[in-house]
Image (tube, rainbow, N blue to C red; front, side, top):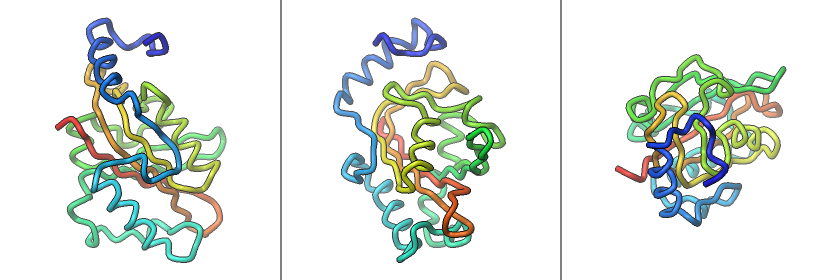
Length: 177
């Protein structure tokens, strides 16, 4: 795979290539059918319910007691405008265990790097389109180099004022466990 980042070591490269072959049909985009994981789909339905007739729900609309079984897979990011970047604010325990604790870090410095596209690009797509973005495929963590993972995820916009996306909430499920 010629496009793999330079920080992917020769030891890790075969694992990523093997995982990528298993997910040759890995896709990303706005279509919920991209993901197969039931919990990712459940989180998206929950976001839709909390949104109601509005374009975006607010962070205050998300009630953790509604979805306690999903909390360990949630990531909450703050959106920073100039330059556009995203800061990890809350990271569920399952994600911390598998990928490391990125809380307080900016995505540009500590992003998940996807074989097909970067986390940064996926978050930007949420800002550009204003709609959830789905992905299923292989990723490696810049924080924990050498551990490619097969995951399913959705990134959903949140807005305090109903117009400007100021947060992104995501749900990640690991498919290789």
